[in-house]
Image (tube, rainbow, N blue to C red; front, side):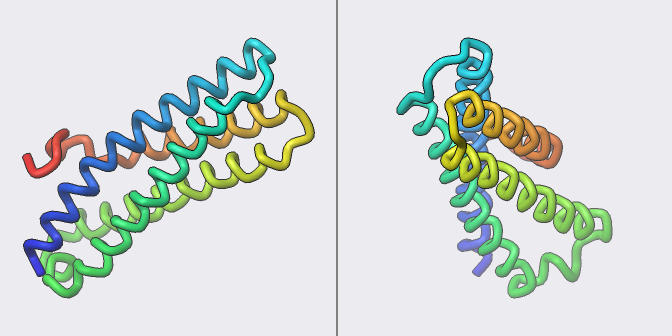
Length: 145
């Protein structure tokens, strides 16, 4: 069980970079489209999908890890600060996933391209702020490192 958990921690760490880079790509694409009043492109849609799909996969792996914690006894034996931090991390990251998904879903239904870019920009900026705030930057920046 501990080996599985440790693998998932490394995989979750690796996915962090997919989410961060995908989020930066999506946010830059949306801001550029909004600033230039460009038509919605396939690249804009692709960047949105990479970001939101990456977040969904990251959430799934995180929830699996969260479910394994009691089985290996980490949550009950760790310091209170670590347990509170774990709950805050999970809660705010779930809010980031919701923000990104709302941006993607509402942009898809927007009447015009400007509205698509505006809705995505606002939602992705909120999601990225939450992500950057709650990533445990003190951990190794590379998986299994």
